[in-house]
Amino acid sequence: MRPVLPFVAALLIAQPLPALAQEKPTATASFRIDKARLDKALAEMVSSGRASGVEALVWKDGREVYFGANGLADREANRPMKRDTLVQIYSMTKPVTGVSLMQLWEQGKFGLDDPLSRYLPEFATMLVQDGTDANGQPIWRPSKRPVTIRDVLRHTAGFAYGDGPSAAEKAFAAADPLGLDHDLTEFGHRLAHSPLIYDPGTEWRYSSAVDVQALLVEKLSGQKFEDYARQHVLAPLGIKEAAWTQPQERLDRFAATYLLGTDGKLTREPDAVTRARNFPKPAMTMGGAGIVAPIDDYMRFARMLLGQGTLDGVRILKPSTVRLMSTNQLDPRITERSWLPGKGNVGFGFDFAVRIGQPQTPEEQRGAVGEFFWDGAASTLFWVDPANKLTAVFFVQTKPFQVSLHRDFRKAVYGETYLGPQGD
Image 1 (tube, helix red, strand yellow):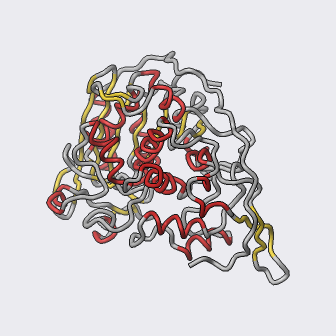
Image 2 (image 1 turned 30 degrees about the vertical axis):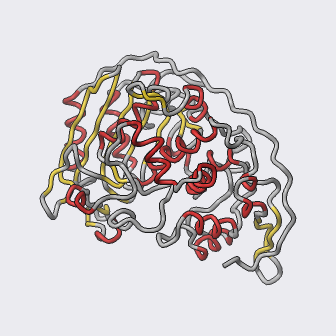
Image 3 (image 1 turned 90 degrees about the vertical axis):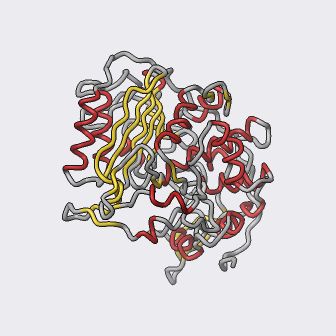
């Protein structure tokens, strides 16, 4: 149902925003992959009680240089973490969605600075809170400009992503656009009739925008989103099992998820929660989450990105498109960036965080300028480091998000002294 909000006129068309300059990745410090160092790091993650099981895969200079696993994928079943273990990758789904949408951009199906409403008319009128009235009720006004597809790709649209303190977040939670019993069409209807948190283009805020990307893929391609992603991204890369829809016979390879409490102890997340997106598959196919994958499948996707859109002779994207996606797209005027600075000295491209400068302190995550990456709610991580011809995938199933696991893994990959090339 449409919330009781005033109808307002369509908004002005947004002015195009130029892609922002970014330094070319260059390596100025050397390091070597130390298998013993990586093995020790993974073992410590388990022995410290931060994870039940972990595994990692690293490619460098065109070859696999490390695979390791430690601990249990399922403690209660005493099932070890193995190379064929399936994990819920949560937001590491987002880059797959972005690649799917950017294929359609390459085909001329849309422009980055087109208003979203050109393709999804329900989004023509978006409201933003403008204070409260004498009774403390929110006053709504039209957003100062339309949401553009560029906004949708870089998390500057103003969409919410759950409940929160603002009236817009409360409205989003009440509308429940991402309910698992909705399909993407219903998601779009509910989201389009919920207010924005802020005016488009003024802040960076993680959001349901990637689910809007999935809806755009359906609209522009004429296919269901999962069918499109499988046919045009996953299958051409030789990815056989990574998917939203999973057959029941794979359940015995699916890792359990563990919750790390304030007492430092791991407890098992209820299986009904862990399995809800895949076993069996519900109506909702999120663009922002939902893929279950073994580590080798996701590495094939990461290697395609490292290969500038190509893997084993199969082109998924043009090199220029990968560069565009992995270039910082945040205008310097966008100073409100939520928790993004906690990822390090980074900006944000299209569905990737992008390292724009050398780590500022030894405590910051190690990496090279030009690296792009993302992670998932159960603490999974991947990154692509063009300067060092490297890509790495880290799988674990611990909630809430454990940044210390990423810091330790990166330090094990790059070594104690490596901080990466100097940036701006």
